[in-house]
Length: 474
Image 1: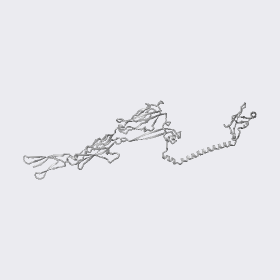
Image 2: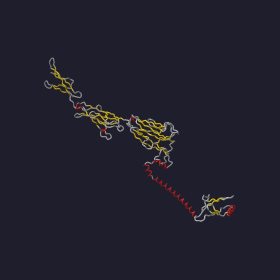
Image 3: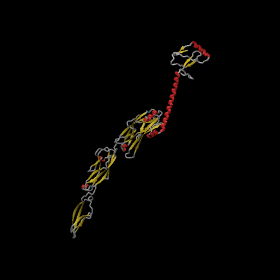
Image 4: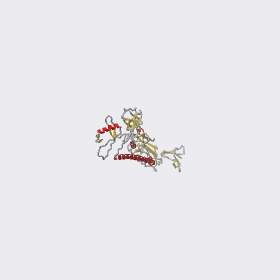
């Protein structure tokens, strides 16, 4: 008697004792490849003709936890638009286990990195442990966080439990939620910045440049510039893509001196957001006058030295931007002062230079010498004036009359004669303070005899007369 089974099965029949056989596995069984086998056992005798009998067996392979859950992808990339509502479903992860029963039941959990105070992932996302759905716990802000990533673990319920991991990367999509911000000219409520334009400027003269940035990215950060309002339309124009303000035509004497321009800065988002900036333009004949107010230090020096003339103050705004994504930038303002020369201390000395100047003894000696010479000169002038006054006072108190040489001074009395032969004489009047009379006598001049005789006759005819001041003349 013969007993056998199919040849294509991982089983074999092994004789045990007479008329007894053992069904044994010939190799390893994998339930995940084939969980059930149908075996036909055939028994044949050795007679003629041969007779046979068949018996069918069904062998079911039981499961063991030999397979870990497997994700459909090794990494997931999810996109969520910023300013989302809390508890928003942002995506799902999926893992399967080839085992059966409890060995195939998968649970999900988050694998968060070490606690980072700047990136609290536990407060950003959560996952459903049964189905792997991911939720955003709070609204995301693209300007604060552009992307973040975390791990997800899928574990079965076998014993021992097996697990696997996948990486999830969340990209925050920008929304147009930031209006353009104007960096120059500054709009902080301080005194407006005035741009100077010479009247001799040609058409296309660069007046200034409006500099603005947008906190968004992509087309939401594309800026365009537009001139909304102007004191004199057609005189100035704004380039749409770079914000340069230029003259549109030649300037004339009929154009107003002061101009006010309103420039609109608009992004390319949907819906578009905008900001406006006001420019003040002053038309001048040239840059030789201080049209702009001077700084405090410069103004004090200008008041001390009227010859100091400041030409103009330029303000330069420099933007430094990196090439990252998104790009980050910083700005710095430079003030440039144009002067006629460097003979005057237009700017204050740095601390080091000022310390060296104070420590230089030669400067101190020069200042002391200059002060000494000035003091000596002043004392000499005062002494000279005092001596002259003392001499004049002493001469007046002694009763003497000093008759100056040369032309007569203005305090002398002029007596003019009358008649055909008239002569003019000037006498200095000297009176004592203690005398009780107001009379004085003329000194006889030295003249020819004819004049003396004539004068004598006149004197005899009029020996005494009184002038209009009340003095008696003899």
